[in-house]
Every structure is written in structure tokens, then in C-alpha cells.
Length: 386
Image 1: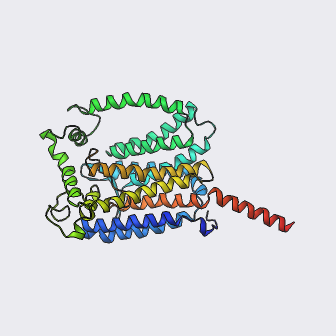
Image 2: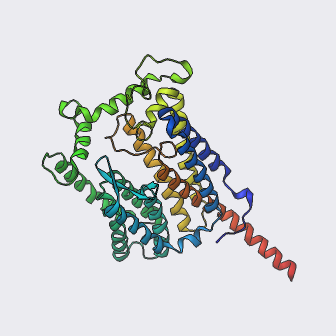
Image 3: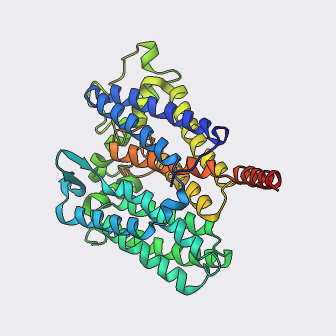
């Protein structure tokens, strides 16, 4: 379960990037809501501890429990469906004693772990109809439970991550091309249905968010786009270096005037833009991009397919969620309520991401270079013995 590793193979660069972005997150959450600072700090410390422990555990050993993890995931999502607590019209949280968490965030990590092992086991027959159908069914079960919360953003997110995992596993381009040809008309049909006022595919509030994005000039949907307009105004008001350094308070503040709701989670990027300006936003974007790229770099050195899939899967969550959150804050996408990885307030999301990063670090510790050195050492010891 726990091996002895050489310290020089530990990816301290990734660790420093994670500490840097999470520290910025604590600062921004404190600016948004000072009463949440201690909770975010506890989440950061706990996340780092969990990451270090998991980074020393052989990921191949962890993957042996793929079906147990899959079962736990289904039980958690069913628990949300049966006993979950409601907030904002959605049932996405489980309350266990005084502890409240969102199982979907952990579910994304479990799904990546499960399919990393599944696809490696089916490396030779991945492109057969039987295996692809089995994978689709295994994905559909948690996906339906996530969608029923309702949680369309994470349904889409999990689907996109699954597609990336399939590609990394070696799905043929012929199948990818066929899937795209089928998906495009289905997306067009879906959008043509959801814009209808009497549609039943999505919730009414979800439809209004889409309509406000497509028709921002329509007064009927003005309330749904007001948040994003305010977010853009706040980001623009920060200019180059932000109000924190210049002391400028000429524009209504995100934090002081309730200018943007949920500024500690969904619109944390607006806080970064207002208080630290273009430079602060650029630092946040560069750090998140560097973390995603570091995951991809480590995937290239993984000892097996499961390691490659794990690194790319975790990296894709960071990249996709960052892209979507920033697009929402800047008005380039409909409001989805997606947190900014390692920055937004939310202990379940933060710790789940650190769980994923711990596994990525272990993949790096068992890189091809490490395994070659171990083999050379074993050969040398054998020659010495002889």
C-alpha cells in the first residue's frame, strides 16, 4: 500500500502551485466574507494533509478497490436523492451530524478512478461495442442521479471528463468522428426544445439562465443576467492593479454593497478582478493553467495507462471548471454555479480536488524514470550478490 519513494521524484513544483492558488483563495474568500476565512483555512490544511498521505499510497493498490468505490459513489448519490438537504431549489447536500458535504464533488474523482482501472483492464478490446456499451451504462447510473438533483452543470462536466478519459484510453478516431456527427444534431435538437416555454427537459430556472444568455436584451430575463453584468462591472472597476492597492472605492463594491451575490463561490473571480485588477486575474488564470499542464506533463511519464488517465482526468476537471467559472464571471457563458478550483469557498470541492492531486503526485512518484532506476538498482544488487 505504501512504498518507499525517492524524494527527488516528488513533484514539489505542483505542490507549490497548489499552495499558491489555495492561499490566494483564502485571501479572496476572506475579502468576500470574513466569517468564512477559518473554514477555508481548515479546508486547505486538511486538503494538504490528505494529499500528502495519498501521494505516498500506491495508486495501483487503490485502483484494486474500483468496484467498492463505484458502489460507495452510488450509495452517496442515492443518499442525496433520498435524504439530501435542499438549498436554492436543488437537493445536492448530505447532512451527517454536524458535517454537511456535496457528494457530487467527490463523485467526479471516484468516476475518474473507476474508469482509469476499467479502461486499462479493457485496453485490448476498448473499441468493441460490448465494452463501450458497458462503459456507457456504468457512467449513466451516477449521471442520472447527478442530473436528478438537479445538477446539469456537473452532469455536463462529468460527461466531458468521461469523453477525455475515453480519448486517453485509445478510442479510435473513426468512433470519435461518428460520435461527433451524432452529438451535433442532438445538441441542436436539445437547444431547440429547451428554449420553448412549456418544455420539460430542464428546470424553469435553468431555462431562464440559458434564455438570458441568448437574449440578454429581453427584459423578461434581465434579472437572470444582472449578476453577470454586475460581475463584469466589478472586474472592469479593478483596472490594472485593483482597488486593494489603490484604495479606490468609486464603484460599488462586490463585497461591501452586495453588488454580486454568492461572491465567495460562483463569482469569486469578480472579487479577484475588483480587488487585484488585471494583474490579479492573470495570476489566478496562470496558476490554474500551470496546475492543469503539470498534470498533463506527469501523465506523459506515467508507468501505465491508468496513471495517464488519472492525471489527465484530474487535470481536465481543473481546466474545465476554471474555464467555465471564468466564462460565467465575464459573461461568456450562462450562469452555472460552478466553483473556481482551489479558490472558491467550498470544503467538499477543495478537499476532493486535493484527493485527486494526491493521486496525481503518486503517479509522478512511480514515473517511468523512477521505475528504470529501481530496475537498475535491482540488477546491480543481483550482480553484487552473484
